Image (tube, rainbow, N blue to C red; front, side, top):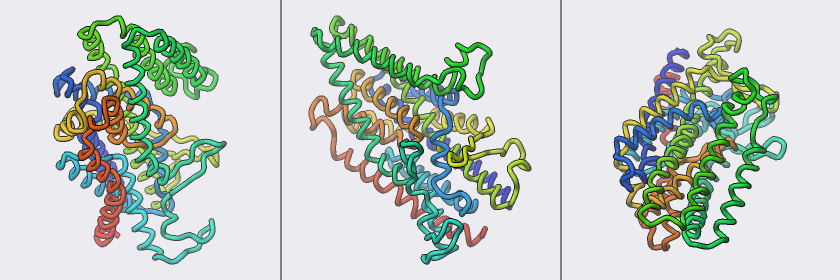
Length: 447
């Protein structure tokens, strides 16, 4: 029965990934559709392609964070099944209502809620003894873990914190990009000097982020140069440099362009910015499902008493452990299936949410579309680098609000925005409660 449950979880997780794709399609395509740069069909095709392309760009850092939402040694497969079912239900409900809620947070909320329900069902509310001392029902969730060697901490509390921080960073970034480009449109020397300094700073920053050949674990080519260029970590930073340098080049020539020519160039740049955001969306959101599948395999190994060596190759998942210096590994079919599912979902579109994102928050022009998508993409790249599973929905919404604020505060439709904020705040607790109910129901029949 355990193996059957594992297969059901994997199938449902990929279904969730597909739903995530069409639920979050609006994140990457709303602005290019609103500004008529692409038709709706062209836009979803464009976004889906770059969702899948992210397979070759991003690692598994976010997947590892999600897999460790709850302590896999203390839960069973019913917990993960309940979490995935609850996440699917909440995603479908918010999609039907046209609310751009977070697929990421509903998955994490569902996983955590089902784990807490399991701990209460097994141990009650009193403490129980383990090898690590006295534990309580709430200890089953990884709430907070200090970062290693001064690095960023992880845990559900950090994820909750980024409900606020991700859209705030997106809003600040898009606001600053908009102000920069607005000043660049004027015939002044200071904006050009700032742009040149930014270009130099970007090149130096990305150079120092590069992984050299002697530190690449599995070089993809015999050539040192091509191995460095196509190392996943390096590709991501090359993309960051390409995005910033492309906008900087436009900023240097902005003041010499006519209004019509500038708008024409901006519409072409929207293709770049939406592609960059779609890459970030695919890399960030697909990893969350990879993390759920990895957690399910880890639980399956633990509950069946199998050893890692006895597992079939297609299920040989190893979760990394920095404390024990264990490097994680994952069969290639898992990321390939997850990236394919989210790309197929994006291709299906999510038109109700496109309308909300593209026109209801604030009126978006090509200029604002470039600023919002660029800010959103850069935010996703940096949070992925820090292994933080953030909401692409929250990030792009904050970015759209940021460009709206450059016009005037009243340009943002705050009534719509407040409704979205309520959906964001409620997503994790509602998903957790729903998952707990599903867990208790499933335990009656499967426990």
